[in-house]
Length: 384
Image (cartoon, rainbow, N blue to C red):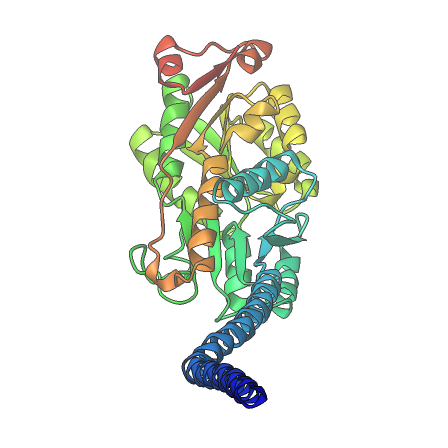
């Protein structure tokens, strides 16, 4: 009886061992499968991980590089902008505190502002004034050349000549020049050549002034002319007047005025020769002392014609000439074009587009003169 029981227990133990072995085999197979899966995942995922990580790393490097590059470019652009603020050299024979000069220079600055240039912000202006002493102009022009300005703006014939003699390379913009061709400043109006261009008042001003004076005062037969022989523009205007005087049957009495010391002598000669009217030409001397000239003329009770409204505003009787304030404003357009790369030789010289005839009735009443209605009708402005 014992033997069958023992044998049955042994069989049961063997069955338990077999089950345990089967479980162990299953675990081992599972482990092998997981290991194989892991190896397959590693095979497929590791290259993918590397491919993802590398671009991310490269992207970070790229972004860092771009930031550094942008910083350098911005800094460089700002530095270049600061370094390239243009400098304009302004050369004038006048005085910085004279009424005429203040108005004209402000007109020039206004023209610059209209084109986007603000003095002290994105443009610098170097001022040089001869203060009525034209002999100083060559030295002042030389100073602007030494400063290596980007462009020189010169007003008047003598100022333009001084600038042109001082440099053959720095661009020059002129204004208020009566005869740029005759004075050798430009080869022609359409093709100036060289390094100078701008605005010129090339017109028959002298003859027109004399004609208007005669129309306003038909009885005028002898006209005194105050002029500066050192001023080439004055010489040209006087020549025009001589031609017109023959047609109008007027005798001219030219009176040289080189400084303020010549005024008294000139008006004494006017009284002595019984001149019946006066024409004052535009030059440094006459514009330096507008009030004195107007007072001496009023004292002589002479009808007078002046070159522009500056002397009429000072109390003078009449003026005819270009709108010089408009010419100074227009000069800014030449400066702008040159600063943007244009060559003066390629920019035609512009002539004035606006002429003004101004009559001061208050001045006429003070010296007992009557202006005919037909003359008043032609005036652009009448001061009452």
